[in-house]
Length: 390
Image (tube, helix red, strand yellow):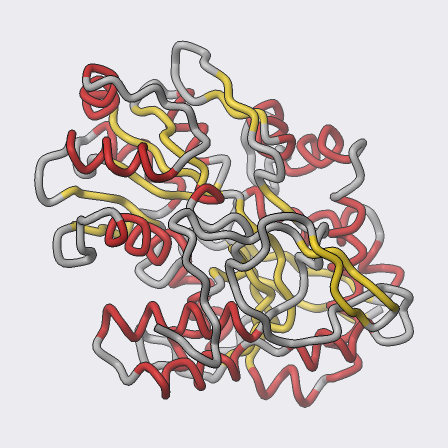
């Protein structure tokens, strides 16, 4: 049995790591996962960068930002697998929620355009929004969404870094007007009656990579057998998580004191997409709120990395072509594909695609024949073709 140490932030989307260890998928591959929680994403990045852990649960844009020289990361990192798609929420303070309701917004929870338009109209400038880290899908989706609706960001938005577990406290202290965070921390804001949920982030981009399994590039390339075992264990865990009978047991395991230490029923809501959005008890159902396996969810598409690289370049002034190339090299479909070869688990035949082009589940060529991808439209109908970016 080989011990592999993995850093993570206690969030719902750390589930593949926890399930791989608890349900024996790691043991099947001869691995014992030493899961090491961290209070913030900068801590996880530093643990990985300085060799304190072998791999890490990581925000999808974080290793790309490091490759572009943004932030404090030092060692080159790569993403060999996607751990989760979607799973984040946008919420507002109680005062802002009251303004939105007074203006007629219905908190329908399904359409990013009217919600964003109402938010811009109701808020004072600049809008103060808490996100877990500057280089995160939370920040990138907020900037994309608000800019498309006429509030150019980040120029007109005050984006503040707030650890996920501190989001409710920041809202209660009036340090932020709104927030974007991974579950269950949005639901905790509602439970503590300091705010209300406005949207799931999947209404901005229907299938986006939220967290990845990151490694130091040298470690991944020098330990291909061990890397392959870890990827397979996590993909098996992701497949188990997709079983309709899994959410209840998953919530129970994640709720334990040594993992998230939170009420299991709040975790189960997010796992099943049945969210309570206000202290009034209003409920909304979001199909595929968080996805671990369906639609080739674990596959690290180079095109998704390039989209992230382009967004980072736009807001930091970096060269866009060079940034897309550097980002593309961070996501490693080659390592993911090699890990699953011969395992009976399928992967797409291509490593890149046009993002935002799928309105319906769509079958594409795969290593074993065909695999069905999930809808992936952007809310404004635009598409991203890496061969001809805007």
